[in-house]
Structures are given as structure tokens and as C-alpha cells.
Amino acid sequence: DVKVTQSSRYLVKRTGEKVFLECVQDMDHENMFWYRQDPGLGLRLIYFSYDVKMKEKGDIPEGYSVSREKKERFSLILESASTNQTSMYLCASSIGQNTDTQYFGPGTRLTVL
Amino acid sequence: GEDVEQSLFLSVREGDSSVINCTYTDSSSTYLYWYKQEPGAGLQLLTYIFSNMDMKQDQRLTVLLNKKDKHLSLRIADTQTGDSAIYFCAETPNSSYKLIFGSGTRLLVRP
Image (tube, rainbow over all chains, first blue to last red):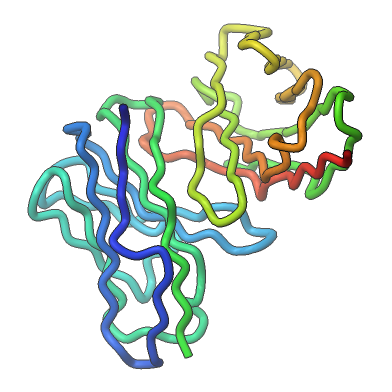
């Protein structure tokens, strides 16, 4: 069974803090993705990675960075959290071919005060 | 450009059929997807259709694709209260790893 896990379901941080969101998949998938979900905007791609140590910017990378040191783990980093980064963050992974299915984790709801 | 649009809300009575509609702009899309998101949860893949198909049926779910009009629909037969969720339509433009999502349709099933 496909399994994508995220380190926290709920997180509360203060403005200016450094925030790490972790995602782990156990399917040996090549691709991993970070999205944020906001009401009325659907899901927007922040970054994705198609191999270890490889990353590509998505549609809204500003204010975020990522790290993929191991195939199974993809981290999203907020260097200095701001209130406009309050959102639901969703991680996904896929096998590694174009147009293949993405499997999602349960999401992390981040609140920045 | 790439854009996926859905209506924001649909309300149906339990036992009726639900039809959720989606339009997309990228004619090169190879696959089109429907995802379901229950409250407080991540996205669950419901079904997908390859662009050279017109219809796909999977138990209570029927997906219809009209490539000419770039219109995708999801029909849920005998809708149940457990079907209440947000449904996202998504496309993968050709030669892309990315999924382009619509804003989601909130389905409310009334008893």
C-alpha cells in the first residue's frame, strides 16, 4: 500500500522562526512534491524533486527552500516564517515517469503567529 | 497557459447522483485526475482517465471526457453522506511532472 507521511498534522510557529516540514514515502518513488493549499486557490506547487539532491522550483517558491538528501525524504524549509505562510502544506510522491499518479500525505496545517 | 476551473459548491440529497464538472485549457494534457479530500485529510486519488478515452467507469464513479470542449466530469451514483468532501480535478500537461489543480468543488450530501 502506498504510504506518504508528514511529520506533523498541526504546527504553530512565530514570525521569523525557521520551520522544517518533513515528508517521507516508503514506495521508492523518484519524484516528490510540496504544495500549499489555500481556500479558493486549490493546490499550488512550491517545489518538486525528481531525484536525490535534485530540485525544481514550482509556481510559488518564494520564501521556501527544500532538501532531498535521501530518496525517501523531502523537507520543506521556511527560513523565516511569515504570517502569509499560514496554510495547509501537502506532500506528494510519484513513481518517476511523466504523467504518473501522485500520492499525497495527510497534510500539515501550519499557523504562523 | 494552464488553467483548471471548477465550481466551488454542490449540494445533493442522499441517494441522488452528483455530477461535478471541470474545464481545463491545456489540450496537451495526457492524464486527467479526480482527487477527493475529506475534512482534515490529505488528497486521495479517486480515479483518472487517459486523454484518448471518452469514459471510464469504476463502481459508482463515472468519468466523462470531452476533449473538444476540454470538459471533464465526475458522476457519483447513489451519493452517500460519506461522499461529502472536496473534489479536485487535476491535469498533467504533456512532458511535465506537474499536476495542475482546480480550486476544488465542495460536495455536501444532505440526508
